[in-house]
Image (cartoon, rainbow, N blue to C red):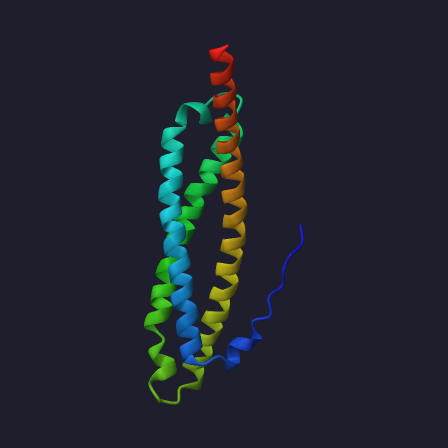
Length: 149
C-alpha cells in the first residue's frame, strides 16, 4: 500500500480565517459521518441475522468492529476540532505570542493529517461495509426468486 505524504508547510501562511473555515468544514464533515454511523447501526440491526450467518460472520464482525472503532475515532476528532477552534483566539487577539501561534499552527497541521487519514480509512470501511450489505441483499433476492419458483 502506498503512503501519501501531505505537504502541510503551507499552514505557516494561512490566515486565522482560513484555519477557522477549515475547522468548520472538518466539523461539518465529521458530523455528517456521525450521522452515517447511525445509519450503519440501523443497517446492522436490520441485517443482524444475515451478518451473523456463518458464511459472513468473520468478515462481518471485522467490519462491525471497524465501524465501532471509526465511530469512537470520529467522536475524538470532533472534540479535538472543537478544542482547536476554541484556541483560535491565540491567532486573532492581536497579541504577539510567537510560541503559542507556532504551537497552534503545528496543531492545525497535525489535524490536517489526522483528518485526511481518517477520511481515507473511513471511505474504505464504508465501501467494504456496503459491499457486505449489497451481497446480503443479493442473496435475499435470489432466495426470494427461488422460493417463488
